[in-house]
Length: 94
Image 1: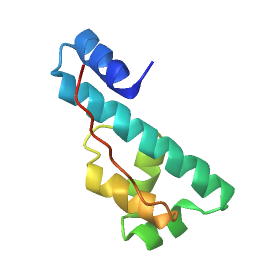
Image 2: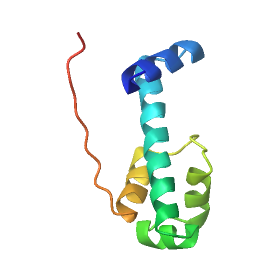
Image 3: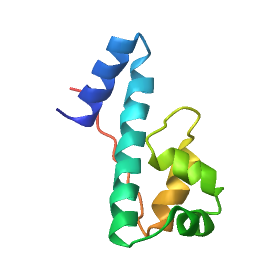
Image 4: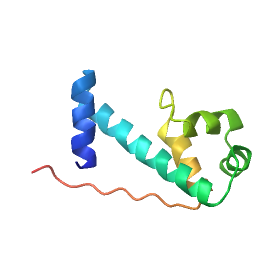
């Protein structure tokens, strides 16, 4: 199932606008990528915090899967801290 479909389905089940479901799926995918890469690089939460300039408690919360009050800009700081550059593509819905 594609990201858009997953997000729309999630939003429908939760009674939210489709954009909120898509946002949740995007955040989860980015966090999972950061978690995999930080593990591969053997980075501690403290090291990620230093590199991303985020509090260690925030890094721990984000990587533990908490999506509540997790902003995209904080996730992007973590993405950059592990050496990734995010790309976003848009396409028209058929």
